[in-house]
Structure formats: C-alpha cells, structure tokens
Length: 316
Ligand SMILES: Cc1cc2nc3c(=O)[nH]c(=O)nc-3n(C[C@H](O)[C@H](O)[C@H](O)COP(=O)(O)OP(=O)(O)OC[C@H]3O[C@@H](n4cnc5c(N)ncnc54)[C@H](O)[C@@H]3O)c2cc1C
Image 1 (cartoon, rainbow, N blue to C red):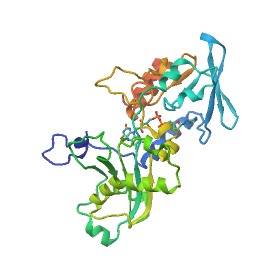
Image 2 (cartoon, protein in one colour):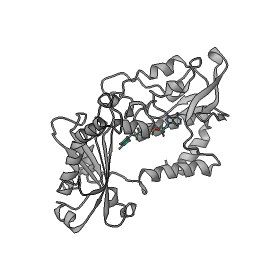
Image 3 (cartoon, rainbow, N blue to C red):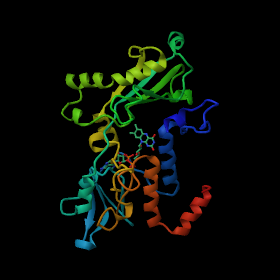
Image 4 (cartoon, rainbow, N blue to C red):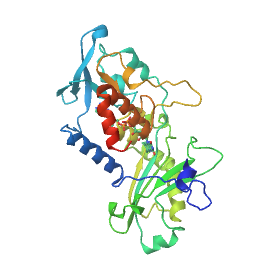
C-alpha cells in the first residue's frame, strides 16, 4: 500500500495512485460534516460529554430514551441513541442496572496499541533549506529495517508535511511537520507514569527518538534545536485527546486469521434504540470502515428510496 502511494516513477505500475489530502486538513472534513448536519436543521454540540444512556423499561422491553450529559442535562431521543465511542468505553455509558451482556463483551475485544507523535513547526531559512537533500514532499514513510514489518515497534514512521500542499496553513516560510508511529506504541509502559513528571519526560525523550530520526532524514539535519514548535504526543496524550481508553487505534481484528469478532451496528445491543457504530462495529477500524458502519445504521433508520436518491445525488 505504501509503495503504491509513494510510487511516482515512470516505471511504476501504480503511477496513478495518490494519497489524497482534504483541503483544510482533517479540520476540513470536520467542517464539511458539521455543515451537512446543520444544513438539515440539526445541531452539533461539542464539549458536551455523555455520562449515561438513559434506558427505560425492563427485560426485552428496555429502550434507550436519550442521554444524560456529564453536566447533568438530559437530551431526549426521538428514534434512538447512536454511539461511536470505542468498545472499551461503550460499557461505561450504561448504568449498572441497564448494562447488557453484549456491551460488557465488547470490552473484551483485543485492542491495537497506541501512538507516538511529533508535531513541529520548522522555519525554512536558507541555511535549513540548503541541507534538505530533495524538494520537500507532502508524505514520507521512513523505515528503519524493511525485514521487521509495519507492526514492529520503532520501525515505521509516517511523516507528513501538509504545508507542501497548503502553505497557508503556517506562517510564511514555515513547514508544519507531523510524524507518528502507526499504532505500534504499547500503552502499558505509559500507564504508571504521570504526565509532567521527570520520569514521564524522560520516557518521552526515549520513545520519540525514532520520530526525530525520521524527520532528520527528510531534512538532512537534526531539527531538534531548529523547531519553533515541538509537541511530543504519547499514548497518554492520545487517550486524552481522542477520548479513548488506552489511546488505542481500535479493535484488533485480523481478517486473515481470526473469525470476525466485531458486531454489526444493528445487533450490538439488546436494548432497543441503541446503536454502536464507528471502528468498534463491523467492518472495523479506519475511516472507510467507520463510514460503512454508519451507513449500515443509517440504512436501518431511513427509507431505502430516500437513500437511493441521496446516493444518486452524489454520483454513486
Ligand atoms: C494518527 C492516526 C492516523 C490514522 N490514519 C488513518 C488513515 O490513514 N486511514 C484511515 O482510514 N484511518 C486512519 N486512522 C483511523 C481513523 O482515524 C479511525 O479509525 C476513525 O477515526 C474512527 O472513527 P470513530 O468514529 O469510530 O471513532 P473516533 O474518531 O475516535 O470518534 C469517537 C468520538 O467520541 C467522542 N467521545 C468519547 N467518549 C464520549 C462521551 N462520553 N460523550 C461524548 N463523546 C464522546 C470522542 O471525543 C470522539 O470524538 C488513523 C488514526 C490515527 C489516530
């Protein structure tokens, strides 16, 4: 997959493969989704974490009627509640009495490890430019040892320099750099460390070395002292920013070896009106799969003819 993305030579058999960037970065996708929701007279609420899904009734007649936010506010549902929190976080959305077996079971799914991140802003002064071996590209894959494979810790680093495509995303003359390990950082080593302590900072320095090395290859120089902004993200950062237990990439489902263990969005819960979508439902992790699980849920709510009309409208 990586070689298809990066193949640009005339000899390549995949020269028409491209890695697409949304205009405006990831925020551009968020803005488009928010716009689509608001255009249909619906509301997007942020900084409004859900504490519990409200369930009424008993036994097979249990039904979700809304959610209670951590602020105490209740938001009632007409059709039901759709959740895209991770499978590890999903069970905590139910009170002890309402929790049902499938929610507890979903917490047992083995999870992928987490990430190390580096976010940098580097000023492209003439001296810095002079050492960059090739014109900067938008994407790189830095591999320490090809024989070890992508799942091996400290081996593969993905680096993007989005300002190559959108220079306006940074002040004039600066490059923005994001380097990360692709879900190869185990959470366990970070669990006992408290952010802000010397031990945590020492671990950050140790575990980010492979990222700095990858960026140094691209820039032809060590950029530690050159970067105006340097943010090192750890599994703890990931857990906090993405609101996911253990900062995990998502459920580890090996399509080649294991039987399919992810539930379909419709059948996730025994409580009527609760839907679990996102990377913890079939077909799994990654944006295309996540979108597919949402389609499955949407198909269950909406009229088929209405869906067909929407698909036609967007050229599918
Ligand atoms: C660094 C990185 C690179 C990636 N690269 C790719 C890639 O190249 N291609 C690809 O296909 N996929 C990629 N992915 C994976 C992809 O981003 C995820 O699979 C996808 O975003 C999962 O979507 P989701 O809706 O299931 O979960 P999320 O995007 O995690 O959404 C869950 C949301 O629920 C919110 N939440 C949690 N608890 C609560 C609560 N109690 N109340 C209210 N809200 C709550 C969270 O804040 C979050 O916004 C990447 C992921 C990472 C981290």
